[in-house]
Image 1 (tube, rainbow over the protein chains, first blue to last red):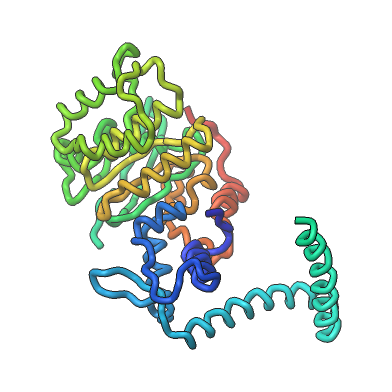
Image 2 (cartoon, each protein chain N blue to C red):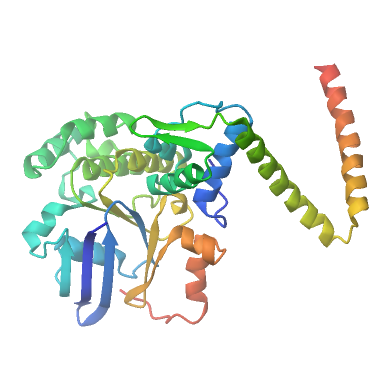
Length: 130
Length: 239
């Protein structure tokens, strides 16, 4: 995994695992790989993985079962909340950038709509040509 | 968490020239620590002082022992293979390690050698630089000790070998052991470090948590490292 060295690694590991949960790579109730395995897979240190997992356990998005390992929560409300959080944090970033270009809120909404319309079109063409 | 290494007021001179002075450093168990500094800053010297193969003034304790013979038994240092003639085969070197180090774990060595694709039947003269370093890493980590000192394991090594070596370090590091890795190019190892120690102007300029740099200072480790050199470090060339 490639890391942004400006952002704390434990935070990037959390985000990475949350994406796996929300994209369904890690299903509700699924067991997470062992700490050392995660460290090797992501090329980070064991203590950093442990720190990320400790925070995820505190946020109750993963459940730690003594002696068995860590499991993704099956609480649908919790997962919906997690998704909302990730969506909002992505949007916050875009919103911030666009605001700096002096766009008003309605202009931002309009731009986003235009972007989706334009982006939608070529993809459909590709799909046809496949 | 207890200290695996405690250095107090260490000083070392070579030909009346100060290499290190007033060095204080404490490392706790179970960490991966980057030892950074320019070429000639004294990183290797510091490692040799810890193992006891160089003698300075001051106190050094490894796992609570200060006497050199006991200290050595707690430390595994990545010796380059200079002591062996080029005609030696890798397996002969392994046998030598097994004979002189009672804590050498052959099964551990075999597992690492397999992972790193080391061919034991090859002569040392036939090994590439990257392969030689892989042998050194496997030999060093195959000993069961409290403190591992890896002296610039990545210098002059291609990126594929580097990644393999990093994986093997993560995979085979004993939980309670601490690894000190020296390097003058920090970016390649930044994600695996718990802490960094910077050697500059004959002493320890900083000892700080890696995520503390990102969290509290919002900086990349490399930028942080370089920032220490911007405001007028002394320019005298050592050695």
